[in-house]
Length: 118
Image (cartoon, rainbow, N blue to C red; front, side):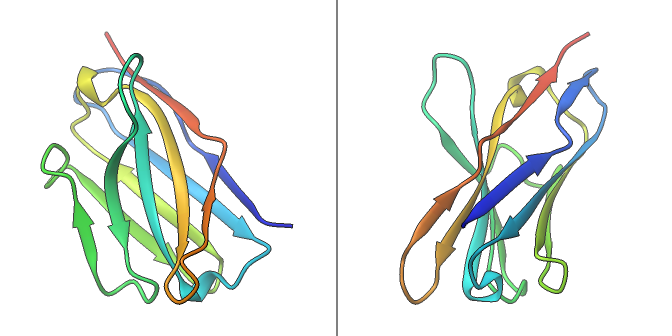
């Protein structure tokens, strides 16, 4: 059974930091590109960051560059998102996604809420 379980969300003040984690099971993690997405209230889901299957290549949305860092540990089957200098506009539900490099199969986690507010 495929599972992606996010954790680490919460309420943080502007300028603060949070670290999100996503634990994967039920599929060959090392052959999947991983990404984080977010959805703010009333808005469409957007891509935040991606990391290649081996971890050597990362990409970020312009809005989070230099503030967020995506990483993965293939041995532990986890992907993380370190979020610094958080802004109110970073508020939303953050989702972890797995995309098969060869198969193209996609899996989504259930999401974790991040709220940036004073």
